[in-house]
Length: 319
Length: 319
Image (cartoon, rainbow over all chains, first blue to last red; front, side, top):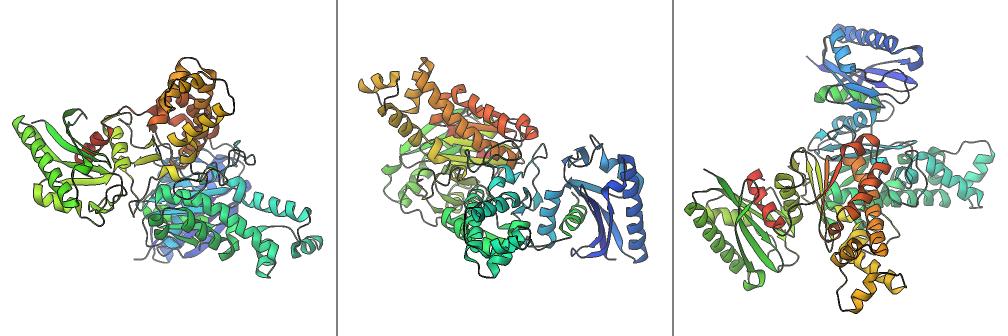
C-alpha cells in the first residue's frame, strides 16, 4: 500500500495543504486564505475540515496516510509540537497544536518552523538527497535556513537553532530587522539586493535595467536575472558581488560544519549559476581544502510547493 | 574496580601522558620531548613504552584501564584513528595510528585532533558538565574549537568541522594565517591581541604597560591582565574591545547552534570576567532572545592538563 502524508504550510496569507507521496510528489493540492478564519479555534476547525477531506481522498485512492506535517513561521517547541507564537497570526500564543490535532484526528502530527520544514523537504526529496549533512539557505525577504546534521534536522535544545540569516558578517554593516548591524541577511536578502541595485542605478551605473524601470517594470531579483541573462554587464556584476559575499560567509560555515551540500533557494538564488559560481569560487578559495573539496553548492529544486512538501517530509521522518 | 584511561597529548614540543580517572583527575603524569624520537617508528616505540609503564602502574593500583585516548594537532580520520598528517611532526602522513597501537597494546585506542579532545575534556570533566550542546573555544596563538552537539563531538563527514577560528567576520580585515582576510582568529587570537595593544601603546596611549615594557617585561595577554587587575584603564579597555568583538561573533554562533554553554579557554581568556562580561553582554544584545537567555558563557577550568585530560575523555566516551 503506497504511503502518503499530508503536508500543511501555514503562512500569514495562505494555508496550503497537500497529499504528498514518499517521492515528494503532490498528489492533491488544497488551500484556503489564512484570514478566512477570524480566530484560532476557527482556523483549527478549518484545518481539521481540510485534513479530513484529504484523508477521505487518500482512503478513496487506497493510500496509507502515515501522518500530518505542519510548517509555520514562528517559535515552536518541536518535540511537543507546541506553538509559542506565530508572528503573523494573532492568538496562537502557547498552543499545544500537536496535542489538539492528534486528539481530533487520531493521527501522528509533527510541527516545525517553515524554514526547517523546507530544509527537510530538500533533504528528503530535493537537492539534498543522498547525503547526511546539509545546510539549506532560503534567500527571501530575509535569509532563512535549516541544518541537517547526521541525517536529522538540528534544532538545538531550545529549538531556536539554524538562524543562519542572523550571523554578523560585518559589525559596521547595515542595520538588520533583528536590531543588529551587518547580519548576512542585510547583505544578501532580497530587500538589500534590490536596494543596492537601485542605489547604484541612481548613481548613474549604465544598465538596461534603467530603461526597463522607466518602462514601468518593477525592480526584483527576477528582473536583474533577466538583464544578466540578456548579457547586461552591470546586472551580471551584481550577482557576482552577492555571490562572493555569500560565498565568503559560507566558507566560514563550511569550516565550522563541514557539510556535504549547501542548498540555496529563494529570490536571490534565481540568479542560478550567475550567483552560485562566485559562491563556489569563494568557498574553494577561502574554506579549508579538505572541507572545501567535500561540499557541493546546489540550487534548491522544490519551488512553489517547497513549504508543504517540506511539511510532508516532517511526517515521513517522524519528526 | 575504579576505571581509568590513559590520555596522551602529542604536541610539536612535548608528548604528555597521564593516567586519568573518571572524574578527570590525573593520577599520574608522564612526559617526553617529541624531538627525542627522530622518526615515526621511534616515536611509536616511545609511546608504547610509556603506555606500558602507565598500564603497569594501573594494574599495580588495581585500576581497570579502559583504553587510550590521543589528541594531536593535525588532520585525522577520527572514525578509523587514521592520521592524514601532523603539521608539526614530519613523517606521519597517512598513518593508521589506532590500528598500529591497538595491535601492539590489545587495548581500544581513540585518536582525535587536540582542539576536539580539549573540548570533550571540558564537556566531560570541566565547565561543560551537565549539558548536551556546547561550543568550546581556545584563544591561543590561533583560535581553536570544538563542537559538542547532542552529547557528542561533532566532526562532520570529512572530520574537518569545528574550525571556529576561521570564520570570516570582516572580509576587509587583517590577513590570517590560513590565507583569508578577517577570520575571527585575526581579531581575538593572542597574536593579534598583543599586536594591537603594542600598536596602541606605540601611538601614545597612556598605560602602566609602557613602563612595564621599558622595565623589560614581555607583552602578553597575561601582562595586560595584570595591568587591568591593577586598575589600568587602557588595559581594561583592550579586554572590553576584544570581548565585544568576540561576543558579536559568538552571538551569530548562538543563533546558528543554540548552545547551552560556550566554554572559553586559552591566553586571551585569562582576562576572566574582564573579557567574559563584554562577551555575555554582546550575546544578550545581539543574539535572538530565546537562544541568548539559554546560553551560559564560562571560562574553561582544565588548564595545564587540558590536552591529556581531554584525550583521556576520548577513551571514556568511546570515540
